[in-house]
Amino acid sequence: MMNNSKDRILQRLRSSRPELPPAIDNIQTNDFDWNLEQRIETFSSRMASVRAEVYQVTEKQWPLKLRKLAEDRHLSNLLYAPEGPLAAEIESAWAHSDSSTDLITREESLDKWKQELFYQVDAAVTSVRSGIAEVGSLILWPTREEPRSFSLVPPVHFAVLRAEKLHQTFAEAIAAEKWNQGMPTNALLISGPSKSADIEQTLAYGVHGPTELIVLLVR
Image 1 (cartoon, rainbow, N blue to C red):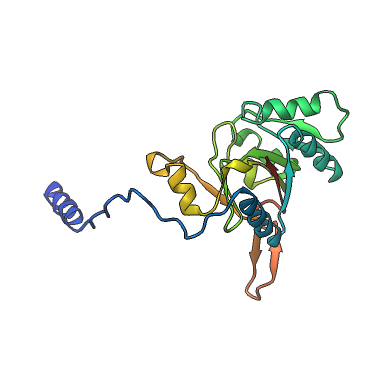
Image 2 (image 1 turned 45 degrees about the horizontal axis):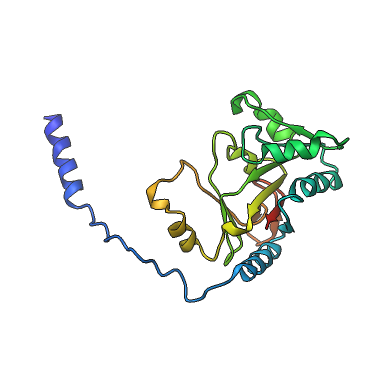
């Protein structure tokens, strides 16, 4: 009897399921076409409007700029992913320096060092999948090497974005990167430092995450 009732419920659900729209081959993302300089200018302006910092650097400069920014802020440590895409450049920048900011990493499960992450880590650095110029956002697809906690927990988040990965719009990013062919468990869109407002609309930063977002735009 129970199985019959379950089958009838499932049958009703299946019969009422809406039809999926047909696939669209050519998505019209906008009616404008920004060149790289325009995308960079718009992205930087949008980021600045929400108190994020953007520094344009070369491929050779960005690791040293990262170290200097960390030292200038008197950060005691910087969390990075030793198996991540930025590891070699970061380690090289710290290798022969007497930096006041220590490089740290933790490869254990988060449960084993959660207290340290929340209360003793000053900053973290992550790579960025791409960016959205129109609204000033970063797109992160967290991985096992660079988990989402790196960008969501420490007070300062350094993000390294390649300029050629800067799309005009979100729709363009989805189409260009073929999101329909596979997505991660988590996809993050980050638009500035963490912020929240109370019932009186008083804006506060760092309530639920980083108080500072610093983007190294590599070109």
